[in-house]
Image (cartoon, rainbow, N blue to C red; front, side, top):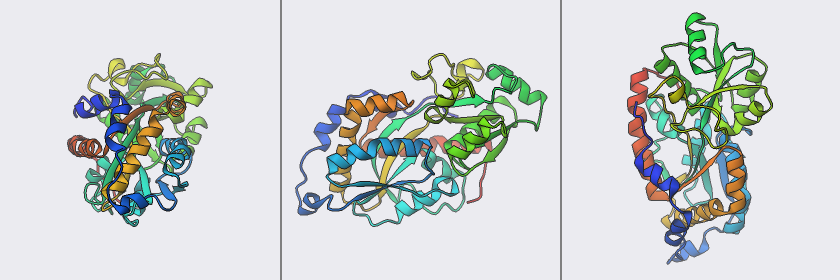
Length: 333
């Protein structure tokens, strides 16, 4: 699999958000743009409360509502590893009143599920990238492994005895562990759950032994001593837990699995509405209190405008097509 995040993402993640505001905040010329938004905006979260999508959406929604001048209503539509909520967004009226917070799962699933009920490029209009977050490999303290190398050795000497939990089939957490299994030459059994909350609950209860989850969802349990961190999936260490090595430096030099979160609208949403949404999202992400809150929860604020977001989707589709083919993984819808 490819080793580096797309160069476009790296550059844009470090670029000042103020530049994006100057470009996107220009007043719209036609009457339709002047009317938007004229009703509440529904923000679909395609997972139950408690996961990265939900945490991020609830952090952004109040201030986005303030800038839009309309309520932003969180709508958790969980199921099918995020695909039910994403499909609901794809089929919503394309008037700007429905958006969805989607992880890079949307660029992974086309290569996993033969009959996906939507096409990420044809059925959506990119609005913005809002954040990335390191994922963390963690184990229950009862697991006799203190680092990634010891965990791999344990898996090789105890085949069939280790399980890992995820929020569902085809989620980035699931794919990250499949990449780990492939790279390490081990088989740690996947146990899918209906969301992050129950997946972590069973890890805390030792019903499963390991998980790769978002820093935002696992960090509190690590700090409380209830989980042992082994490594992060990104190419550099996380500022939230700098003492934890990357999986690449700890044991698997080529290992890298990013996780990002975007805002998408149904295809056909007026360009003026997309531009307004994106500009106001950029304003939200530029707010010091929001940046501080997200950073404290393990997120890295990483804004991209609609055109840049579309390019990231295209590049990630190519990346995951190769990775999934190399792993040889297929899922049923």
